[in-house]
Image (cartoon, rainbow, N blue to C red; front, side, top):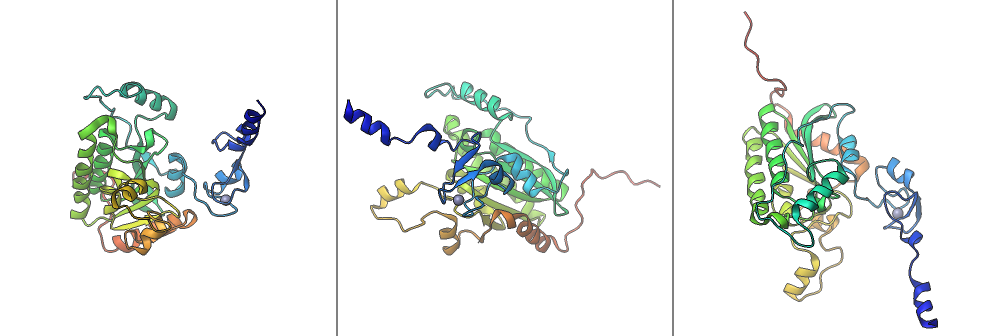
Length: 295
Ligand SMILES: [Zn+2]
């Protein structure tokens, strides 16, 4: 009995563990300081003490990048199917319905048109909170449509990725999204429109292996985990210890896989700078359908 109590006392209490978004205070994952949640939100989900970059909700990300009042949503009109009738601990249809209810969107992505520092862009933002940001048919299709529409309208593409990889419940259909998104990006390249990719924590699996790392310029947020297979799988495969900081943004910058690691406070400015350089000399975007000439 006494022994049991000893173990219980050493367990962290519920309050100490409370890092939930609803908690008023939270203990920073980076510096362990107690931070007031409102301060964290006001500071764009970056710890005011140690600069630790938390994952950011989709709406806040759009507010960060789009000029005020310019975002116009494109996504949200297609629904995931369940051709495999997949069931693990629960049927896929139930799992996705719960996520839809909780997050108020049909899948793990939001796309739309916006202005970014005055540049006409298509914004693609992945939602890690929605089934781990996994890329199934809907996520892939929305990205492909956004890229194609951006090309049609003469917009640059800015994608903010956060994903656990392919959506296993959709099997091979998920893997096909890698090819689909990659091909769709070709439409932008044909028109010499820039594609800026922003990798945030975590960007992994099939998303890393497809559109996320195909940007003309690839930025990553500080500390973001960016990988294809996770470190444990690699360690077990090659049977070697992995170097410090393996698969983190800063490590990948040293290895040349990303072009720069950019703090969230500077992100919009850096993306805008790149768009300015890469769109110099391009024709003005055709934001409306061409009208018949009037005499
Ligand atoms: Zn901190």
